[in-house]
Amino acid sequence: MATSNGAVQPATPTVRRSIGGVSVADMAARHGTPLYAYDAATIRRRCHDLAAWDTVRFAQKACSNLAVLDLVRRAGVLVDAVSAGEIHRALAAGYAPRHAPPGGDGLAPAHPIVYTADIFDRDSLDAVVRHGIHCNCGSADMLEQLAARSPGAEVTLRVNPGFGHGHSQKTNTGGEGSKHGIWHEEVPDALRRAEWAGLAVTGLHMHIGSGTDLAHLAEVAGALERVAGEVGRSLTTISAGGGLPVPYRPGEVHADLGGYHRLWDATRRRLEDRFGHRIRLELEPGRYLTAEAGFLVTEIRAVKRQGSRTYLLVDAGFNTLARPVMYGAYHPMSLCPADPTLPEGQVARGAEVAVGGPLCESGDIFTQTDGGFVATRVLPEAAVGDLLVIEVAGAYGFVMASNYNSKPLPAEVLVDGGAARLVRTRQTADDLVRGETV
Image (cartoon, rainbow, N blue to C red; front, top):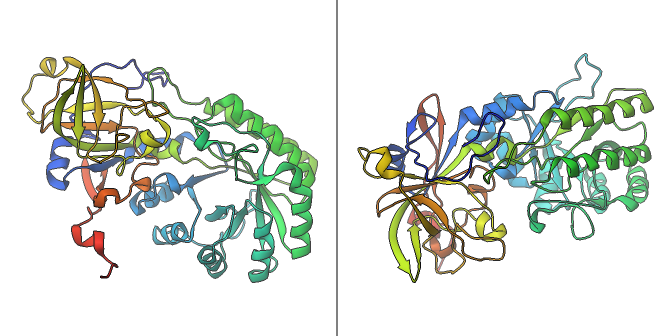
């Protein structure tokens, strides 16, 4: 639960009976569990938070359901795609492939969809060329490959500034340990290759990791400004990347959005003075727009003692939400009791438990630390049939789900205006074997 300054209150046994005004128990009864639910009002609020930026571009890999993409599009947010499939999703959600004519503000037009990657696989290159999608190139080899199919195209360069940061080493996207971006010392060679290929470098992008703090995010601005001097006057757009943190753990707070924008706006203005024309300032949030809006609803199917430890075993596993097993990621949790008449005081009695899933892996634990060590959480006393709500699960949740153990993918609902709308049906047993032959 957030306080007025955005901090998460200390962990106490919590009960959640509704999401966006809709009963958790009713949604579970209607759509089954595990179930992902997204609160549309929270997503709209997070989009509005970033209104100071010229362009907000959603990194849809965080949460790519078509209904979510349509929601952010209607809120004025553009989109990033990292595959041919994500290009297809963006188009299906109503995004135009090419930008509209420039307006009267002197800024270069914003591209509705940008393809960002370190390679072109063959399907992605075909999709980019077919639809005329703008490309953010993270490898110099992409330049000749694009020029051979789309001569004269404009491109953005994604540059690795030589440093990185993230909430986990696995989300650190800068420095020598990262495969991402064109190494900062190789930028002059990449610019020569772009010129030889007949491409115009009009954009510059840096992203050093997800979950970084404001101090590390601020370092990117200085690094990008230095590289911008090498690119020169062809530059019309700069992107601060993403990585804006959201509160997961008690005591964590949101980034200082105003301070972050002021820092980047000052960088942009210095470049405008240097080049003599307007520069579009982009931000590329993923988790910031959707993480806090998402909830994973799962049913408790067993309560068991293992020595001195109590385990709640639920019907969601790391096939449903992979972040804890991948990063030791922390997610707030609350209980929705099966008995709606149970007094709040009785529900709030706390017990220290570990929470695990149904998979045949010891790592299938939602309360674990980085390195796979089982941890515990204080939750209300629970019984089989109660619902556990795993919160702040709207980013890198469903999109990383799998069919491991031949488990079907869960349903997704969008909660908006006091109603829950099914936006993805639960997979069936037939869906699991579709396309296979014997």
